[in-house]
Amino acid sequence: MKKFILAVGLLSIAGTALAGGKSCEELKSEIAAKLDAKHVSGYSLEIVDKGAAASGKVVGKCEAGQKVIVYKRG
Image (cartoon, rainbow, N blue to C red; front, side, top):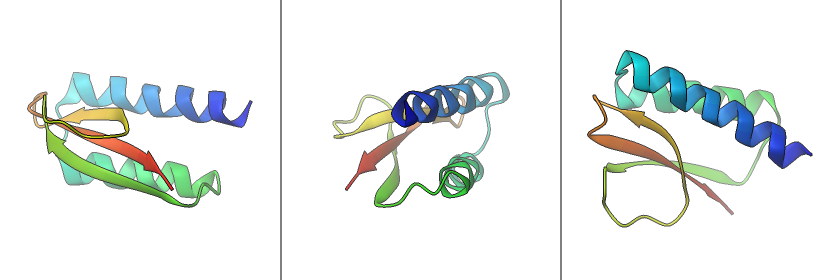
């Protein structure tokens, strides 16, 4: 259930980012703050170019969709 709530929260952040075209660092900070507030640990967030090979789950888009933020656990 916690994973479901986390996924819904992250996807809602990603939807907001699509509409606003936020900077990647700003969005990454917001996502990290929400994860920290939910006491999630052992994760990393990485900013990569859209379409680049990255292991993990895309949790946000930024810089007008040119880059994505990838969530990795562990």
